[in-house]
Amino acid sequence: MDRIARFESLRFGLFIHFGLYSQASQGEWAFHSNPAVHDTYDALFHSFNPVNLDWDQICTMAEKAGCRYIVLTTRHHDGFSLYDTKGLNDYDVMHTPYGKDIIKDYVSACRRHNLLPFFYHTTLDWQKPEFRTDFPAYQKYLRESIRLLCTNYGKIGGFWFDGNWSDYNADWEEDALYSLIRKYQPDAIITNNTGLEARGVRGNQYLDTVTFEQGHLQDDGTRNKGRHLAMEACETMNHHWGSAGQDLDYHPVSFFIEELNRCRRNNANYLLNIGPDGDGSVPLMAQAILHEMGIWTQLYQDTFYDGKLSQIRTDENTYVLDKGRYSDVYCSKVGLQGVEHVVEEDTAEDNLRILTNVSKKAKKIYWLDNQESLPFEQNGDTIRFHATGYPYGRYLVVRAARIEWE
Ligand code: GLC
Image (cartoon, rainbow, N blue to C red):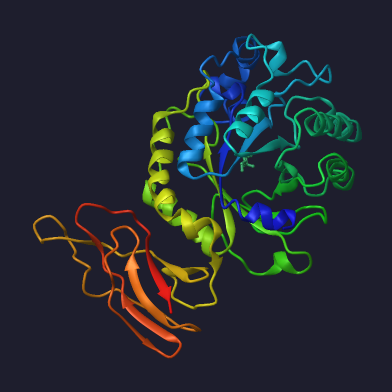
């Protein structure tokens, strides 16, 4: 399997935004956008001591949620590094009260939990003077930083760059940066986020993916004019990537399950973000959402991860994953069945799903969550069945039916 196919087979990742800004808990852009936080940034550096940062706990959460990789902010736009920069810049974790290389602990926990570690790294820098005054010198500094990350932590999953969207006309010296990675980490995936305004756009020849920040996945095919690239959609749980204790506007779990499935049917990876608090602990809402995601991914793991997108054609609320002798039909919007006194709309009767371009003969169709068998009709290459709602007592959002083939 080549590295892009290997990356695609991971399906679901956990994004983690963590840094000095986590202590202020007003988003990762607070240095830039919030004068009160900006003015106390030195203090945040001198007080950084996330004693409750527990990578085994975070990795366990990720694993149980069904994630297969993690992308952690090794350095964000404020310029502060969670890794030991070995004298390259004193603005790193080693010079805070915490004093331990967070990236080292992160990578070793990922290995223990069979999760692939990826490194987010900013390409822009709000504090390093050279970013404004001597761009080539800054690029050299950036490459030296990446060289450290390539050589000090063993084999990693890849790099996730972010910041070129701040000025597409600047000379980011991308070839030099990426060929350095290829030299030390030939199997690493290289991503460079195209930001909110250029989703899905193909960039430098070395890049392995196209990105869709905050969902809005659209595949217009341009990404594959040339070498095949993977797609990845990253998303926040509320409106902030970094911790924001006063952002209460979380999406519901059903939204994330739908999004995960939207990515899957388009062969895109889904990267769901959490922002630990300043002490390193994961906010309860984020823990809860990951926990609930795990209920879904565990039930459907068999085809969800390894199934092959089927040739079978369906409608926009349905898609099919094949696995040899059987296929799973993933159905959105199935509704809930129950008596009128507790369930507003019983959807047991309608909800016809039509599968066309079917090349095999179905023997049996049944829901995977309760094994209930489903009546169906097959006429040549077309199968029809009713996607009955969840029976009162459970509602797992996207519901999968298994077709066993003759
Ligand atoms: C944006 C933001 C940044 C965040 C990133 C994640 O580029 O600038 O704060 O880390 O999105 O996708």
